[in-house]
Image 1: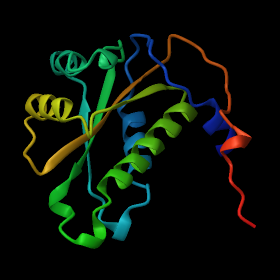
Image 2: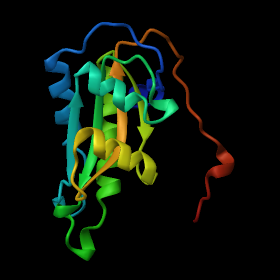
Image 3: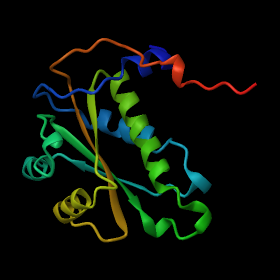
Length: 168
């Protein structure tokens, strides 16, 4: 599969089979995440791989859109301790690039995924922070559902020529 095809094939999946994701695939996803670009190479990301079913249920109840039946959750968070310089306050972009890498590799590996936003919603941040026992320096950015899809969606683009402004 080409990168372009993977990008077009990546779709939000909300229904999953019960099949567990192997440790090998989890490690591949995390390696891809950490290959993302990072401003000044600060790499502010932390990845909470949640396999524990009780904790998953708590996380899924934080917000109605989090409550899908995926067998694996990864919470991507920014470590603000690594961002003490005014020129490197790009943790959101760095962590978002890491999330995108996870989503794209998941597609290539035959997994489904769903990116659920946490930051900048304070109530979600606080709830996730409490469940995962995070300090104030750790800001949860996204919750990613992962697993084998129990639904199929066609590849597509959302290209709109009207949103392209060409400056010659």
